[in-house]
Amino acid sequence: MADKEHSKDNVFQMFCRQLFHSSLSAILSSLKPVMINLGLYIADYKEQLVLSCIVRHWCPKCIAVCTDLDGGGVYCSRKHNDFLIEGLSADILWDEYGLIGDLVPFTNDFP
Image (cartoon, rainbow, N blue to C red):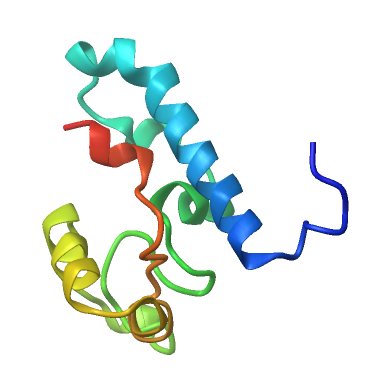
């Protein structure tokens, strides 16, 4: 258990986030053969952000610009996100695309 001294440390926060995703992947791995749509698990906006590695105020479902979420946008996909993550720095991913590029979401281990 961490004390408050490390709770605001970026490296520790990233470790905790990745531990969360890795744990969910391991816990749900036995369901992989029968799992069709994990979306039913995702309940509210805050939880959607955590599970999809999206920055707050961005849409977890599409690639709409955060200042115009009602303007519509193409649905995002793992393929699109992987392309961005491989080609851009973590700062650009965060600021311009709303992605936390340092994390591998547990959903990458599922169809």
